[in-house]
Length: 206
Image (cartoon, rainbow, N blue to C red; front, side, top):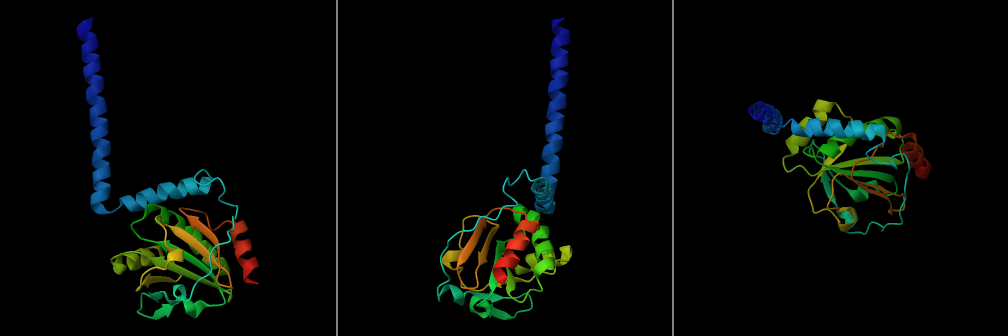
């Protein structure tokens, strides 16, 4: 009887070990091939859509943040085509600013929701979208955006990020009012395709 129990335990241990080795192998393959970002992003996007990831996903919580200073408005940006811009170029408009990177799973997860928002309000002359990539290799961000066929405009900073747009977390999203004040700040993933957010953004642009 003892021998039989030992054999069962040994068999169960071996099976568990093989299962864990299989999981480890899959994880290793994902990381080696670079697919882990996409897989994790897809998983987080699924949670985002269920509403479990952010209990207040459809609520817009505004803040009385700082105003962009003259130095902040000098933030230098370059488009994938090499066109130079600064924040000052967008003065007087509502700015939707998202700081992201192609290697960041939460960024990848929320990107489709930003694209949806852009498709719905991007033609509003009073709203500008600035997706600022922190990728050290710009071509990775370019390949990501092209691969997803996203149409929203994105930029690369060519000067240091101003204090008002600095955060230890990415993605980080800011909405700047027409007067240049930060009135919305979100550190982490959110659903920007929600009608509540779209309606609020359009409302403050009028």
